[in-house]
Image 1 (spheres, rainbow, N blue to C red):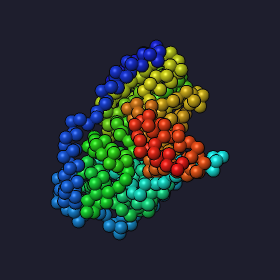
Image 2: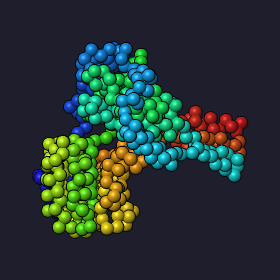
Image 3: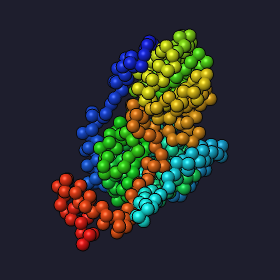
Image 4: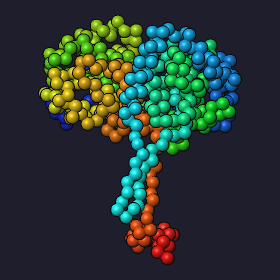
Length: 434
């Protein structure tokens, strides 16, 4: 298994790893002109443009009448999904909802001694649009993406939620996507994909009304469209390829570490899978496990390329150095497979979501535990957070000053205004003393 081994003696040596990962930065410059053209076309052409792109790239013969999925079709999808699978979806949804309920913020107000009231109102956006990728020809439905995006929006109290997903070649959506939508009580579902779906959510068409926030993962076309629309609509984040970084000591099982590295490597040829260890004995065992396990994967070719290009086993002198390097990388999914993982948690400052202990592999968080799996990548965990209830909320400041406060501070307010060259501001404050 072609997975490089690096020997880093200190945190300062992390630049060797940084240089390895730098090539994963793909801002979408190569597709940006085409995406701009798509955005303009959908903005001007509405349903007709949306149907044309869908017909050309996803479903031959698709027309505008098929954009909106009927509520009866959403309900009927339940019959195509077995009771055991419906129960799994329901339990995962319940876990996700319970976690996000704890994230809810409350509006608050405070009163100053002079009677002035200051505060903050927390309110949901009016309308959210959720993009759900179609998977491989619609045959690998991203059920978890729908759950992870829709449930925080519902917990936030967003009154209108629109789901959009590319149709299969026969014009249908995978019944698992529709069944999940039905379970969540979502009745607005549209058929469209890629950048034209994002354009429809942002600008609106005759069928798809525009939204305030767009969330959901996608390929470089979807990501570039979202990036170009920042400022017109809110977005969840600009996410890059998936990544995992595992801190493993001598107690870690090589087969578990390999399985977890491969869980990300199979995503995408640009996915990054790294193990940082202070146990040289783990290195050889891990390489053998990676080779053996990869050979049996349906997506073995993708995993091999990801490991060859962006994978690494990093040997460090101690776990303190490993944690320091981890904070420099700021990975999406750090796992801590050490004798006492909780002892390291307080030292991990930059991460999308931290997975502690051997019984917390990344897929547990991806699908079932409850925390959101839409996470910052490419080092952006240094300054950004997972998708959450807050993604779909606004915070509005409230100011109710008393006459005593404004009159007593009018001269100071006016002075600051005049220092900034804003005479009308100064006079507005001073007028309260006349």
